[in-house]
Length: 92
Image (cartoon, rainbow, N blue to C red; front, side, top):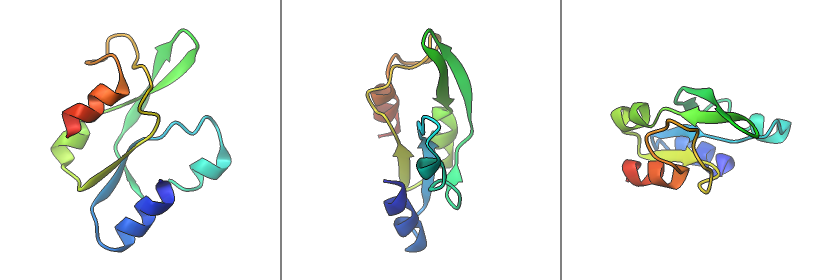
């Protein structure tokens, strides 16, 4: 997914990274540099830190392509919607 994002960006497409759950994996982290990322913060879930992305910032930025990982993810309590797939529906 991230390799394809780099390829599309190289072809002139407007690509941003919305959220990537790298789970500390260096191989995934190494694929993000060079791509524009939309700011995110750490939320809290009972199992530990939860990456929270700024969907409103993505909407206002209006890129051609948004990279979103782990669409089955449940959002942190207090988020606008309960699940990441619902965030994606907002983008679409």
